[in-house]
Amino acid sequence: MINLTPKSEPYDLELPYGIAVTVQPLTTASMLTAQAAARKAADKEIEQAADELSKDLRDGLYQAHLIYELATRHIKALKGVELDGKEAPATPENVKAVMDLYPVGERFYQEFTLQQLILNSSKNVSRPSASGTSKEAAGRTTAKAAKT
Image (tube, rainbow, N blue to C red):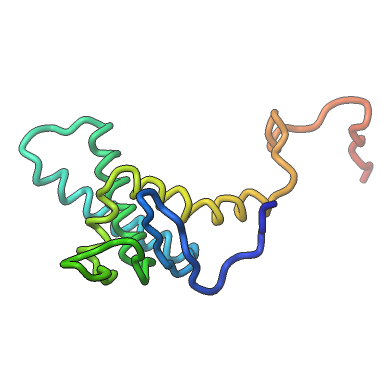
């Protein structure tokens, strides 16, 4: 069963390789902030590239930076990650290193943003009609213009 109640307290996400992270809930504001920071970081990296980068590579850089931004802003604890024989703290460097492990970063992004996607899609129960809403209605049930 899907729970549509938005999370307001930190919660855990299970990731591959036995890794778990404790995250602060995602909000619209925090998503927009992360997207802006990711775009800025990706653009800077693209500008510094010696060669012209393909659209796919530019999109990949943006996606990687978005995962880094969301992770470093929202992950408050790492579980199942060691550093020098001890549990690794959730520093930005450690979080980025964990997100670089495939498929950990991708799974984090999917799981972390899933609740927000479900909530957004459930807000509008009725979908737009196939012809859109800006077209004048036609047919037998169309009301005639009122006389003035």
